[in-house]
Image 1: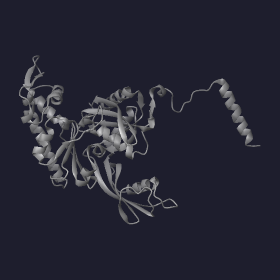
Image 2: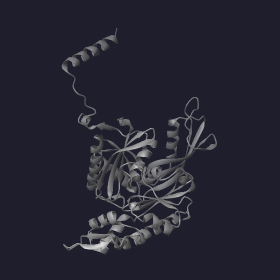
Image 3: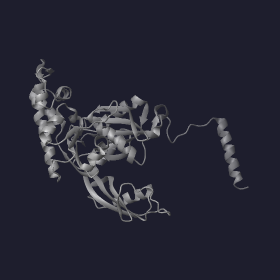
Image 4: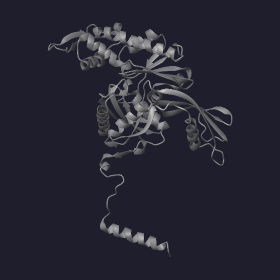
Length: 419
């Protein structure tokens, strides 16, 4: 196994923390390790308990490590939330090489030039997404590498986020014994898995339906155009079930995942479900149809809020390529059909097409691996477990004979400098 081709993603969600190890070979991805842990220290995508979050990260990382017998060092972390803002920027540099051929260094310099903007002190730049390059007045260039020119310009979108949230993420990952190789916007990374090139060009809405919140990202003319987050997700459905059936949140979540159906007309009245009730030793019985009567109104409400937010972002609800749903809630039976009825536009569910992660809840994690493999400057560094116990900076002492020979060679070299 070539360690240089391994990438590790860390998706810190409200309900789950997921660590995925992917092997990338000539652009193709092979998922070789997956770890999942219950998330206790996150609410609506924000860290509220560092110690609990660290434990969840470490547990998920340990699971993934055991699957492939490696020790994870560096991870690519996804970030999202209503603190994310997009800022348009423009960068200009002179091509540095003598033959005026544009190289990777020139691309890096023009991106750095675009970062020189005024942002609020509480904000920090997460990433820069190039929209197009211009070479000596010739615009519309998608990749200037290898071209000849004197003046290189770039139009791009700068993604900024809250310093507090970013630094808390850093703290959690570092306390879990890992290093952050890169921060990426979750929806941007997920789009590499969830969306086609045609959808991005025509205009599409990517809706990530998580446990604590629902992220809405609009792509237009092939690039990221707008982003927003509404603070309602799968946890609200869980709360409704717990209240309606007078059961615990844990039991309500189990019912939602195992027996939930978002469309009353598709739910079975004959599927009997046993429910543990609070304050009673006797289980009660309900049907999948009973659950659907609780779930459908909440899903319909979320879809209504998504449509309203898209309009608030300045877009017509009838976007050409429609809506693409992903995230854990999107995997529930009936969600797509209900969304089509409510939104009256094309709707589909996106999920990774890899063994072991064929579920909408893994879209972000796999997307981070694919996005990092194309955009990361430094690849994830990993070492085999049997080598972990040897400190990187400490070398084993050589045997006495070898040490003596080494000293003789050093003396010979030293004397040769003066002869």
